[in-house]
Amino acid sequence: MPLRSKWQSLPTEQINPATLNIDKLAPVDIVEGMLNEDRKMIAAVQREKERIAVGVEILRMMFRNRACTTFLSFPAALMATGVRGILRGLVERKLVDAVITTCGTADHDLARVWKPYYHGDFEMDDVALHRLGVNRLGNVFVPNESYGIVLEKKLQPMLRDLWKDGRRSLSTKELLWEFGRRTESRDSLLWWAWKNRIPVYVPAIFDGAVGYQLWSFWQDHKGFSIDQFRDEADLADLVFGAKEAGALMIGGGVSKHHTIWWNQFRGGLDYAVYITTAPEWDGSLSGARMREGISWGKVKETARQVTIEGDATAILPVMIAAALARPRRSSGRVT
View (tube, rainbow, N blue to C red):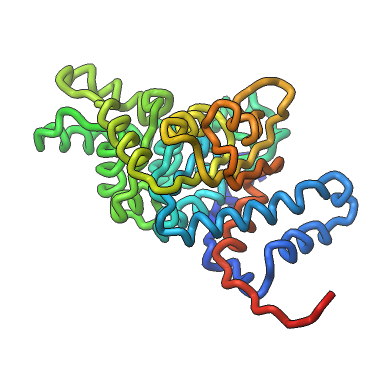
């Protein structure tokens, strides 16, 4: 079977948290079940079992506390995977109050409305893929026609319509709401953000395919602008108006930093769950544990916080499903 035909038979699907029926399990049971799949894994990840359970409990606190303003931050790569469905579900269910992310999140969320991505492999021949017009994002294949080409085809008409309607200056929140609304797709995180009026902020809006389309449009429409000061004013209102603040942060970079940066101005986060694969010893923001944020005043000394080391595409679906599960009644047994 030709290489392209082989992987084109394996489109990347979304994970739907509603299908993860684990209401009868407690968080520790779920984690134990994961470990029991391979007993050899226990020694390597034993220390993470309790951290995952703690993370689930903190998420439950944030989701159920109406006084808590909850931030969700993550990098773009997750939107190219099945976890897009989990992240979309958080916005769809109004479990978060604001999203801070990167331009690539808009890239992948929008592109996948119109074209499929595919399962691939980390060890593929990248020269052969390039010659086929296929981009590799880890083990996800993104054909050119599913990325830049379709985004140009779909976004340029949207931008022209906004221009004709007199919309010459938009914040990233306003722009992404407009893009989401015009997709008319319930599979899209941006569509749900628009419908539920949940802001999506992208501090580095030009660092991606959507950003390039904005730059390209600006070449012939020099009166068009992206007003990020309005985004920052919105964030200030959210932070200073929050009675309590919590954040689910996946990965580092600008998304994580912008979340903790703004929350330092209210004395730090009250709740924080951070999932990362980065090592602490390299000094990177991605590797920085939540406890390091306490020294900067970005996380409160009294905060309920945890850093979980692991692959979010494996951990996050289970954690979200567990956090949303109904608490199990006590059996009354003493152990």
